[in-house]
Length: 301
Image (cartoon, rainbow, N blue to C red; front, side):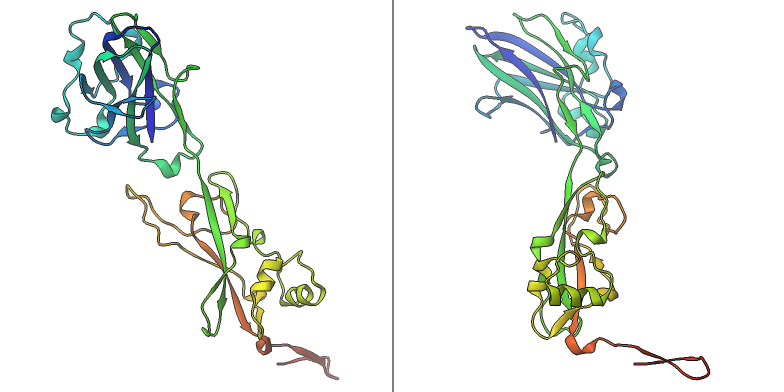
């Protein structure tokens, strides 16, 4: 996750002594909806946006745990750097709130970006939330320009994602390997879409399977599922579907739960699999109900 504060030199000559003071996005700016955190000493880079090259010569970076008001910074204030420390003095990168970057020279007709690379520690809870970059920058040719969080020109990141749930058929007798049916895998917008069993198979009774096969009616069971079932086996609709969890390992201690029907899609639903059983064609149990003369019900089978 990267925010970039851009410094443009549109002049035909180099500009010198550039300073960019960047606020690390967070809810304390009054606009952002989640807190962004820096990772380490490599979290801040100066990049030539045209070439992608990281600029190292003539670059100095300083860090502060203070949420410095960008609008109150005076470019000629000699005490400004007293609020900051160098990377070797930082003890907890997650507490850094403001970054000061100095660039000795920005070449003519070029654009540099001061990038903040980091993460959202509560990513799984922040779906569809947005955070905004903010900064103040100046050079020897440019008076201070402030971009506040939420301004038209401020960088922004919205936490969004999608999860794909797979589908497969499992042989109840263990005679063969499971059959994946990718044609009916389903993709959901995390935090928005609800996962339903009917997204995969609408059938609720075993007789629905018979109808689909005999009448080539694919309204309740997709054709891709029927085509995948080998001779001698049938789909056991009534035993229902289960969902197998993926073995994905998520970073920063984020959990890997199992997808559930009727629940809103979450990041950890991705890669889970809906499983239906296949059983031998002659293994369906049919019940015959007989009413005897005493009006009692007897069930056979």
